[in-house]
Image 1 (cartoon, one colour):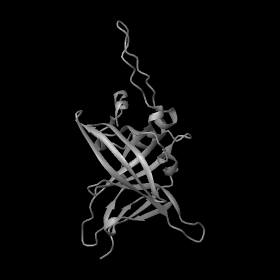
Image 2 (cartoon, helix red, strand yellow):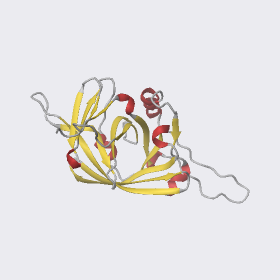
Image 3 (tube, helix red, strand yellow):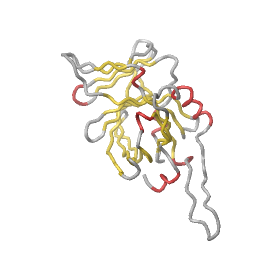
Image 4 (tube, one colour):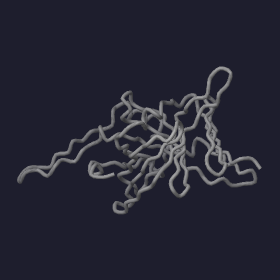
Length: 228
């Protein structure tokens, strides 16, 4: 019996792989038309990383989704916390572990870090996250997101296609909107309403807008700044 393999059926441009717990292996074949960027540059931060908006199928009923306390364990493993609110009231918090995928070495190129990782929560649920764009100052990024099913079938293979991906735009707390303090009597509330940078919004539009059959869900709001 072969190891479980989740294969993303794209036009071969870059092959990334990583062995996970329970003998599962993930292989990513990325399309030449899909850009890639440096995932480590984005996750190497003390800022809270907020999900700004995402595919409705991924983030329906979810608000204030945040990753924080990101700590490097070794060259390919990170630990962090992920919090979010469900149905406006129920707060959920998970301890997460992220495993960076690596490119396969060959005679022309050494092994290297990919733009993708697999994150696993404390209950063993795994999600593939592929960074497809980030701004030059690493404050806003667009991800392809794919929940990984538990492998089934005789050979344990789970074949996944490009259509299985969802999308999410993420912003660091340094550029997100902030709720204003309570104003003096007779004055109005004022909110510093920062929008995602133009190039980040354009990347989401180019690679994500038509991907979700259910449209996009606004995940972040200024009131989220009071927590993760």
